[in-house]
Length: 392
Ligand code: SAH
Image (cartoon, rainbow, N blue to C red):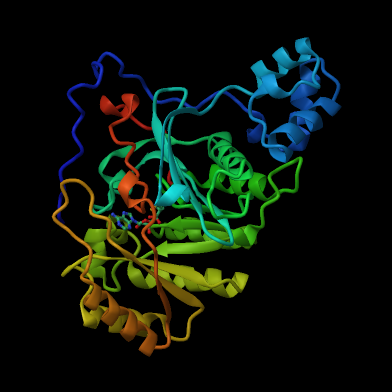
């Protein structure tokens, strides 16, 4: 297997060792709870139950995240409710924009010092949020910047939801040039492996798709969960009967190469993982998206296009080719355009619908697989143990 250099701790980082802390889950937030849960939380503070709806309407309906702006709440109640249900989960550290304001990346510091990123992408007909589900990632794909960091910890439900609510607020402000002022899609393609944080990601999906004021009211079909292929969790997802879109990061049609590019393949092989993806498609009627980062002279050979074509022929699947975004220190590069075109041609000739993804956000390191938070998190710098669980 190819081992790429680990991103070093920057020498100007304030003494990484002295700030070493065990990563920990954040305090509870209203987005962790469904409406009934919020009602009982409010009641246990001695507040009338209708305050739960009031808070929820501010947060999910009007995208107000700051309690100080909830001026219809009496000051005393507001302080109590804020302390208990609206702790600050995400502190923006840096915001960057490119593509004439159509792509924006936000770097967040979490309560324990861990860093994660979110990206907002505007198109003429829609605005999409790309969110993180974990701080770092434990899947170790050698071409992915986040994969080089290792896992710090899972994000809580509210840490995931709050990224989306924040980005929905940015979209609603009209700040995304040339796009409608409304966030309509969410992709779990930021940092982390969503299916390794299974229960929280599913709960976040429910919160994002429940109608306001319980949730954000997005359509399940407009949410994409992307996975390296944790087969037991994929099967569990089938049983949820959600209609979210499933994306499978395949990157190679053969086990020899996939074992290297997506190390979890050593546990669940190409045939098994495709089987689970096809079953998801059959059960939901929704086409699975097969993600394939084209890497020059690594996985872009005509015979691999043909093999992929044979595997996907006649299936409810779509191939999304991603020109590789080279990460710092990587010896790998994107495939040349003629090679990419030939790969597309062969897949289409096999009857497989294929598109090449646009590479938004490259100049702000906001493109696919480039989210690495720019530096190691305080918590992970010391190699602290993570309390993540791989869903079985
Ligand atoms: N862990 C999940 C989601 C996060 S990454 C997954 O692997 O699916 C979202 C997508 O970006 C995945 O398909 C991932 O393989 C791809 N990706 C990662 N690094 C990349 C890179 N350097 N260039 C292009 N795509 C990359």
